[in-house]
Image (cartoon, rainbow, N blue to C red):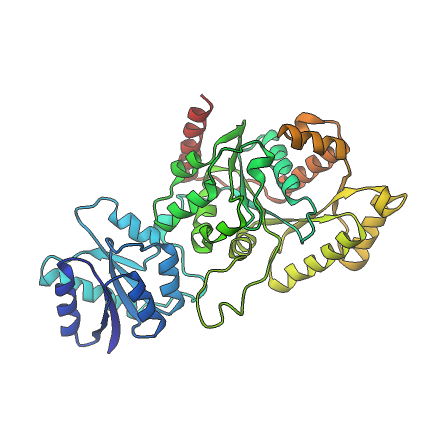
Length: 429
């Protein structure tokens, strides 16, 4: 007998339980009154399958992710009277959807659906498959994660100006802030009064309602072809960036922008002590999941003895974790006062000797230009277009465009891009 956890709301519950108990291969092992009881029963191993109704309170991608991690496959019951019921269930990540039963015949369809799930291939415990409704019609954009070790090497400065250079080169760009320790992209670009758009996008993705238009509306226009999805400026709000829903945000972002540039946090710890026997949220999951999903990781380090040492160790850490297979190394604030009379040569030799990196982009120190840009909340290309630092970042943008050529666009991709352009033009107006 296969154990089934039942979390069905309303009058359909009795029909479902009766049909399952009459089935020769299925047995209801727990009737759950709410989502909390369902998750507890799944953690206790009381069933291999779960049936849930679309009206179950707080059902979202994170909770379905937890059920998958416990080895439980999920069948959703769609309300025929609700046009968005199926989309909500699919967006939450359930494995299959059938109509909520009104009679014994419909209840048998529920039992048959559960039986099909029981013989299907089980999803991976740590990475449940993305449901079809959460996938855009086509993916044509690239995800660029800007990451670097601790010590404030200038990740945000590089991310913001790299996004600006990519947009100026003639491609739509979405600049997102996924730093769970101290997101500051909004402040750097002068969006002090904006609510955290990324947190709102993650909430909508978790509920299965995030689409191209919704994401575009959460990301206001900063400049032509450049939008900003602001992050959480308070470190204690990190649980709002649930990793499973964040992956859906990046999927949608790929369809509305040629490049999605993401400023990430520095820490790669996986909180193994906290998650050894439980599924507690992870502080660094947003950074880890973004690096996993990225097509290219821009690794930023500081051009001083401590910064170079941290950068070398950080590159090794990325390799050990299997992250950032494609990377572009950038060394920020290269200056003679801390690296010797020939700072560029010294930094390049150190990276080649200790990290095997021979093609790093070196960004010269430009304290006056970066300070003025920060003071006026503008980009380096606006403040100091002839600055050596700006030219180096423009060179890095050209390298990114070369490493990530445009993917073939299908009809679905064109439709998604058109939807983004419609919202963009409305925002500019």
